[in-house]
Length: 190
Image (cartoon, rainbow, N blue to C red; front, side, top):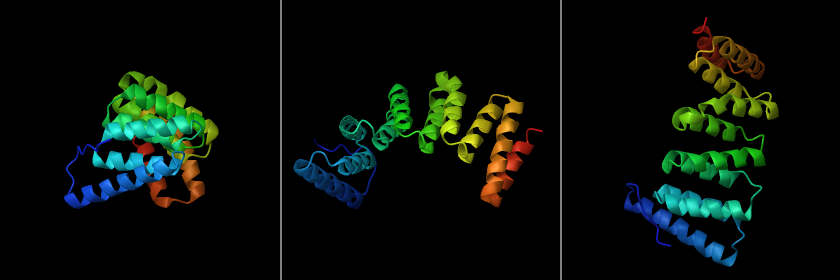
């Protein structure tokens, strides 16, 4: 298929991307089951601004490796931020975390989807983050996101609870800069 460049790129960058796409296609003609090449090809199409090309590639990658999480996550991000297809984004991100429940980036991506764009689903946010914390109980990132969610909806007690949990986790990790930041956020609620 013809690559559709939909972003302003220099001719040098276009040449690099055309080469990556050509090499990827040639590799896949020899071995259509080369999953890593499908991932790379999708990324090259996305970088070129050919979002439909990236979508087709990652949908195929999902079909040949339905238990992976990477191509589902990539497609979820593409559908969210570039295609503005929030149902597609949600579907793929949910599959991504189902396939890899320890993948914190998937929960974060759903948080972003629900809080930034797919606002009618914002009520799903705490359930997704709590599910992530069940699988990743030491994830300070998810604790902070949950604190932000509760803060933003005006639920100070729950926000403080999750800020405090995050503070305990950050203290154990010894990240003084993050500790200071989280404490400052929590202190704005008192």
